Length: 104
Image (cartoon, rainbow, N blue to C red; front, side, top):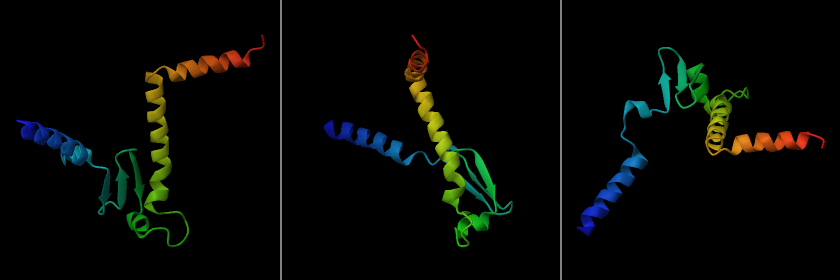
């Protein structure tokens, strides 16, 4: 019985780490016929696929990391703000800022 429970627990853990492999879990799509790379996490597409894959050989900042990093940072900040907002932290900070700005 104990082994069965442990196996079930490990199976659930493995499933959470690996994922289902479903198409909806994709991170990035490389579309060669349309010369486009799309990052599905931040919903941004960039044309010039070969330039992105070859990296920053000519110093123009055209590699995949430079291309998608700003969009990922914006997405990450929005997620953090949404999480804080759910906890009421954002409203409390706005209220505190409003009180500081007033002369009393």
